[in-house]
Length: 368
Image 1 (cartoon, rainbow, N blue to C red):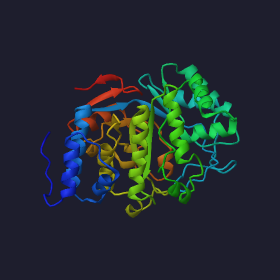
Image 2: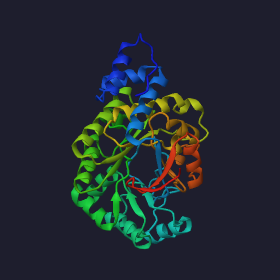
Image 3: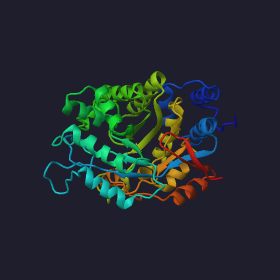
Image 4: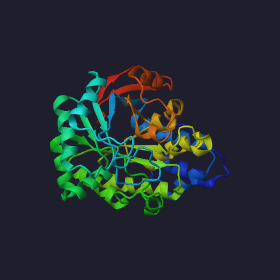
């Protein structure tokens, strides 16, 4: 291990350093100390060490496309700029043929994954969501369907009368290979009540992923930070995920998402700071010791901070993401997508090794 530069007067930080260097798990209280510390470089060095032990200098990305079936949603999440009510201006619900038409327009043979999320549209049956997946899978048999959040799965269970397991098996039969990580927001009932997250509860979100892992799905996990949650709630969110990962080993990656203001013209005081973003990335790597990867999501934090994150514990920069809409509807300032060449350039610029992957982190091409 490289030596860590830190103030000798901070005995708590020294204790955390020793824990991490000896491969010991840090506690929620340790994570809180890291959040409260302004010693960003030490925190970053620790996260970088952990990541290098897990992944070396490899940084992963995928050629993928975001698809949206509907923005009509019964939920009323306070942070969302994407949702529309039935009949409202801008509301849409595409049928399977329309989704396929959009995908064909933007598809090229390098695309390996469709990243699919959307609204909880209660005006259409569960079969609609299956039909859209089945249509896509029939037309693009070699593309992995990464579709729906745990919150959407809980919604499907309610509108169909099926159990969570039955919904997941139906989705698998239709062609879904993995769940997206969304719908978690902050896994705290205080937060969910305050932010009107009237969809899956903390327990339900975790139970859906547990069930998905039990039926053979590897899945993703997110955290939407930067609004009204406490630091303790962020850390408890990570602890919940870490405990479930201990139980199932079904998560592939954790994605910390910086909350976006509802207006693209919102000033910097309405956005998370670069300091907070990079610290959250590093602390995520340190807390989630049983997760293979931490993802830096350029849509939320921008390309330059994504590049910096690769020295602060991140080992994944997501993908090409053609025409991302949800974060941009909420005020994201970043590009709607990047090309493969741009992602390779971004990673090499951080003195890391770009690795094109599939959805399940199988290596497709290493760009030495």
